[in-house]
Image (cartoon, rainbow, N blue to C red; front, side):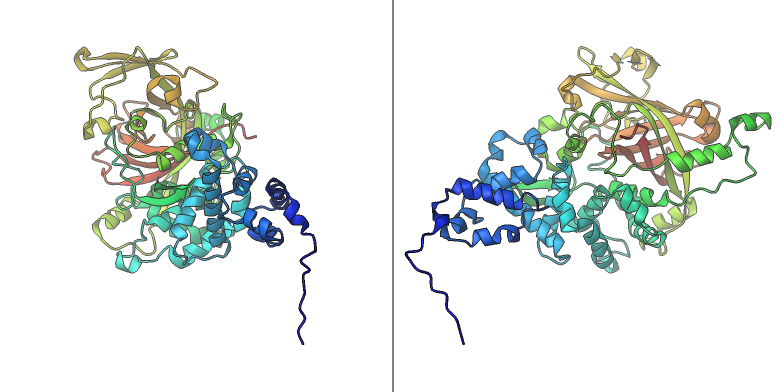
Length: 550
């Protein structure tokens, strides 16, 4: 038996009398309390009649979906970076479609989807543009649970044809980057030790094998370098857009540190209790029990979701991602970007930093260098504290920036001209070239309410200096640092030398890395060749700025 519902043509179709703008308003109210623009939430309205169907169609060309974009997603970062005419209603509608498709792929746990790389790239940009709204639909899609599934099923894809080494391809890079950017303290605290160790096993090759996985967007020893990173094309606000993929190593390193820090140092009872006790016992250098307790408590990597007690807390949250956004989405053909300091947020470095470095044992590292095969299991490592007080110094017109020498010697000198001398005091730092070939002066930051990057303040160059303060120098050895920020991508290169010139046994080292949006300075450091240390031996480091958490 079948039943047929007969509609009388004389029955008034009330919905036909509702103007499209009212349908838009009803739709917005319908989806406002949902975490994502899921079409299922307004499907009944979509199917009510021909007019509502036409008005709410993805191909309708009406402002409904652009209104949804403004209601559900953040717009301040696109407004800072894109031309105004790019942010029209039609392009916002296209962006809604792109994000909806990407989020659905993640929500369905479709790790084999043919457009997974583009979906992950879209979500990566959403995270870089997040001011609070973008986060909710990403959580709705379940990205944090999707990533471990991908790691177990696909991260090691292709290793059998690559001598056991995981690939730094589009998918792996975006997954590892998002894995870090989605980190939160609550999620880390809920992980089991077994899960942490599993994740560290996946991340270790990317973090430690610097000879296979570069930590930089272009060759590290070129000061005015062009971007040589891998690229992927995605649809972004209605146009095909090239996304420069970040190097996988910094994000793998941060996630590795965030987990190994749960395995605290043991406090040896035979050590002096504190510095005063050490002095009484005639122990002038080396850690005390208090030093190790402090290290376990404070030398931690800050996860991406933390708050900051710095001058930028009054600005949109996405501001802290601006350097990463520009590295990813600024065109490599824009020569003006690479001649200006737009990849660095002023004030970032000044202050106290603490963290650690992790080093593989030298013999293990040499073995990796001598063999094409990836080690299994990955070698053991040791972790050591780092404490530095950094200072930023800027070159403003009419001063002339330090000359640039594009050679390896300058690179190993922190990008400073070889043979130059400098004198630093409270007013700044003065450089004098070899044989008085130049003279220039750098001063502390000039604060400006509108200065969100160095280029907006008229600064021509940035020098970073640093020192290990006395309490930490007594425990872990004292060092001084000096170096420069590369304008082409914000790479920080710092020369480290012993505070005491007589301590030649401590050696000279070069730290190279980026300040990631979570306010971690992360990268690799290597000894400058000496009798004690081979130049090829590299270690990873992560330093976190000491700020008052909100």
